[in-house]
Length: 446
Ligand SMILES: Nc1nc2c(ncn2[C@@H]2O[C@H](COP(=O)(O)OP(=O)(O)OP(=O)(O)O)[C@@H](O)[C@H]2O)c(=O)[nH]1
Ligand SMILES: [Mg+2]
Image (cartoon, rainbow, N blue to C red; front, top):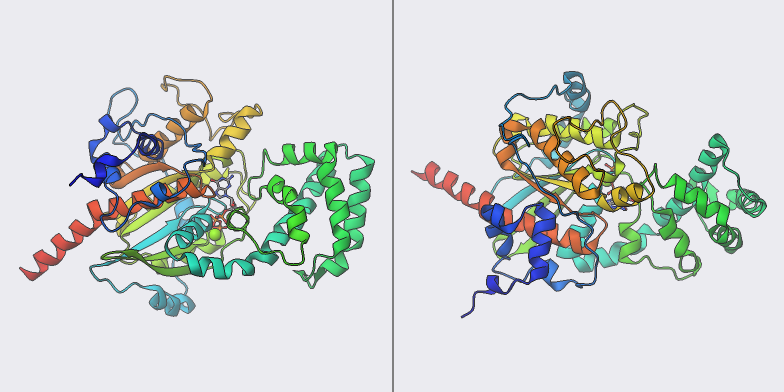
């Protein structure tokens, strides 16, 4: 019988290359895992439409060895103060919660944590996972996203208006009038800060905004420094949003920003002998003090680093960009004693935003934190080169655990890329985590 693995197409090989950033011949270990879809079923990526675009860059990874060929042992300064800030000690009131989320360990249940700074795509990837493994439940719950979607739309209009006012953007008369009309409706839209209704009268001013050249220009400029919400997406589906029977689509949900507070957990059957417990954790600084409650017996950490957020400040108003924050956080996480034997999937998200910003002429290496390493051979600011530089920076930040790290590039809101990522996680779990557990349990029996 033909080996199902050999029937993987060239598209899959391209996906492998773009997900791992490595060529097949360069990393046979990774590829063995990638080529082998789980024996229980064909991979998600194979079942999905081949028409989705793959925006992950064609990069070259240098791994723990430097580009000058020398292996780096010295850690970069990791900012001890930041580590204290991101992982403070527990408060006594939080102990109960810790017990509630501590995972009972057995041979088949794999505990996966989604970590990363705020706005890096954790919840989006968590939703993608639910879409893949618990599709019916995901579909049933979609209606619950309605309020958050409308909130995203209106909140974004408000944010762009405020930014425009601060920076003196020239809004046309139509824009000013439309914004006034929306403002007049705010008491009907919100009660006690909660969105209660989207009155039909709000459609006309929103449409006028959408069709106005001056508003679109403002959106374009705004979206170069804020990728938390894709305003164009919501503006383009206005008519659907105002339909009395509006039911969010999968893509609507995946494009919605809903900040996570605390720890959200779900258990899913992956198929065959595997079961995941996946934890989505709030990434804002204030939320991170709760992370430690979930650190016990972790099999896989999927760490998110938003490549396209290199020029966006963290919410809390600090100087660091979201990508710098991700780097510091990754260094502190990957070097933690809890994770010395944990598989770490370092996933770079928002490559699409990086591409868009570079195309608009935004420069990456302009600040003190974001400098181009002197010895880096390629000075160009292309998606591929910037991705390679950052992958290298992240790996150097955790030299001791670099061999536990698998680097991937998957935009969290892209269904096909996310499916490939979850396929990769499963393959790596079967290749590395399950055998390690079996070994461990056998040595205990002996
Ligand atoms: N364009 C683009 N948007 C993305 C990508 N990943 C996530 N987003 C969007 O970014 C926003 C934030 O994503 P979330 O998944 O909520 O971020 P998070 O890491 O869970 O944030 P916290 O809950 O605050 O920790 C959402 O609007 C997503 O649709 C990506 O790869 N590309
Ligand atoms: Mg979240």
